[in-house]
Amino acid sequence: MDGKELYAKSPEDAVETMISLYGDQLYRLCILYLKDIHDAQDAVQETFIKAYRHWEAFRHESSELTWLIRIAIRTCRDMRRKSWFHIVDRYWSIEAVEGSQMQTGLDGDVTQAVMELAEKYRLPILLHYYHGLSVKETAFCLQIPLNTALTRLRRGRELLRGKPTEGGELR
Image 1 (cartoon, rainbow, N blue to C red):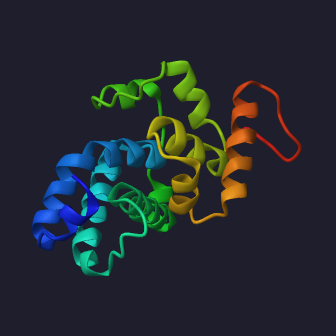
Image 2: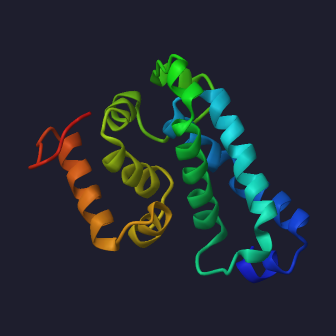
């Protein structure tokens, strides 16, 4: 479904369509970002509520998926800033994610290594490789310049290969 066809729908119908098209993908992103299945469910729900509220303001400068990912990342960041988020134990394991029926497309060791990267390297890798976004879309979602996205992807790959770069770190 192209953006124009979706845009012609009412906000309710558009969000319902986006939930069926992109809900699982956003859920996987939120799990990997928040490292908690229940918080991820809340974040996805809040993402679609925000999309519904702001549907009329969506200018179609990007795809619906990119727009939703941008909202989801902001929602996850807001959740991580809350004081209660830091009180709860955030033990994360690949088994917990696999137990949630999430298919990452990569083996557990690779996913675990990606999750150990610093956030500034982890997010571009998740968006580009796990979610299949272009580098331009990744930069848009993260609200960073294109060259910064390219640099973070390169450094993230180097860290995953075990070749730390200047200024690069695993945590």
